[in-house]
Amino acid sequence: MSIESAWVPVGRAEDVPLLEGRSVTVGARRIAIFRLPDDTWAAVDNACPHKGGPLADGIVADACVTCPLHGRRFDLATGAQHGGDDVVGVYAVRVGEDGTLELLVPAALMVGSA
Ligand code: FES
Image 1 (cartoon, rainbow, N blue to C red):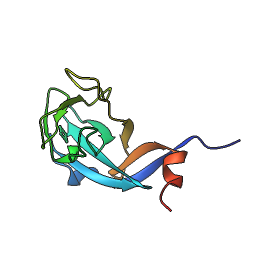
Image 2: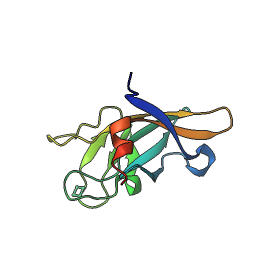
Image 3: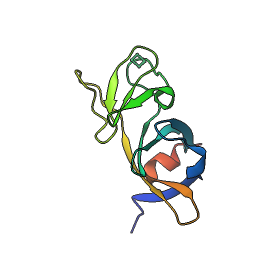
């Protein structure tokens, strides 16, 4: 049986301020992790599908992130663009008892780091 996805440690929860993002590298991909109100978290592909803007540096409000380059806005729960057809990949996030941030990523994403 193959493993289709796995929880991968990517840093410390305490290093991500409320309503800010941090980008982490998993395999060959950069993923933006965001701390949201009420101890909730979100993670999406860091590269904006328009021209690769760093979504981790975007403004977070109303469970959406706005790309810092040209202002496209993405829902952090679904990855869907507001008012457009672009979509970014979304990932599950959890915080371990010791404060370690973990992302649930597809095994295929891990293979792409060569
Ligand atoms: S690169 Fe994100 S809106 Fe243009």
